[in-house]
Length: 276
Image 1 (cartoon, one colour):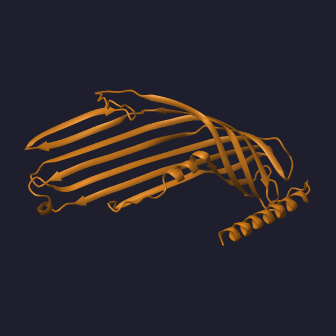
Image 2 (cartoon, rainbow, N blue to C red):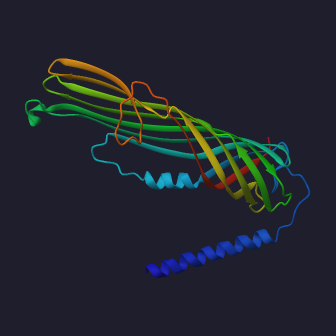
């Protein structure tokens, strides 16, 4: 039965691919400038969605693994979403936003009668990570075809990364420990891509692919730790800084940490065009 379903699916895919090819191959360029045509012109606008290979990896890595101990788990990854404006027929400005957020909260009360003297009465574990990028871009287009479009695009991503981790416990003797770790980093960079998109049928819709490279710098790559403890009535307070990838977990009284990384970038794109 599985093989029959596989054969049917493959046959359907081949049929759709052949139909789409035939539809596109029979089209001819239309020199007229319609308000909604197969190719946008100066003054037109569009919505753009770009799904990168990093987004796909994040969706895979952050597959829901909700634990029974979790009272609140929120995972949200929004790919690059942009608004495009055609300054000229071959020159486009776009401004986009991309967000990635994960929030996990475990906050539980514990029956001291079950845990005995000195047993825990409550325990809290909060982990929040959020990234937001704003990406102004300029596109330069080279083809006049109503079927295919080739362009280069330069982008200046600007954003920030926030992290917060809270780990605390209290027991029935009045002892407690509260650890709070926070981080706020600012990101800046430069991206360059070569793009190719195909206009679908006679609708203002385009599917495409962008290939290129990106370099991103981070300022403030450090964690601030605040620890409040009370054991046997003796209270202590500590504030220090740590690095994420430090195997020795060195505690710094002050710390300056910046970083920069570069990598290749592949992005699948979908654009919908319209007139103002």
